[in-house]
Every structure is written in structure tokens, then in C-alpha cells.
Length: 110
Image: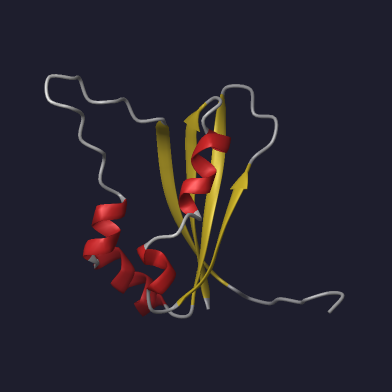
């Protein structure tokens, strides 16, 4: 199993509003190899909000297939503005993808 984290800096005040979007029903729910999605919101940052979107995958190949899928491309496409309107500015300041191997784990209290 691997964990893929998308660590995003977003405009102050936008983190809590954006977080539910990552766990809302969608095509990821039926994607081969996805195990779990969790969204972490960093506390007490003065200048921006930070989200860590952790996706748990059975294999690297499953994650790679998701990244190449049409569903992924659609999910990450910027919404188009209405005709004649300026495009909406993204709340995302920066984004970094980090892939982890689980080296060891322990469940407590089960």
C-alpha cells in the first residue's frame, strides 16, 4: 500500500471550504485500488491555509492509472467561466505531491 499526499497551500479562509470537495461522492469512489481518502487542515498558519489530501492506494500502478484516467483529468479541470466573464482566480497558491511507502503501522485499541 502507498499513501499519496497532495499538500496544498490555499488562500487564507479557503481550506475549510475546499476540504469537503475531496471526499464528496465522485468517480474516485469506484476507482480500482483506492482504499481511503482523508483531508487534513493545518492549524494556526498566519498567512495561508494548508490542506493535505491523503489518498491510500493498494499499488503504485493503481495510482498511476488514476492519474492517467479521463475521470482524473475531469476532476482536476478548472471550471470555465460564463461567457464574457473573467476566469475565477484559483484559491490554490501551490501544490506538492508526495508519495509514501508505509514502512510500519500499528492499530491501537481494536
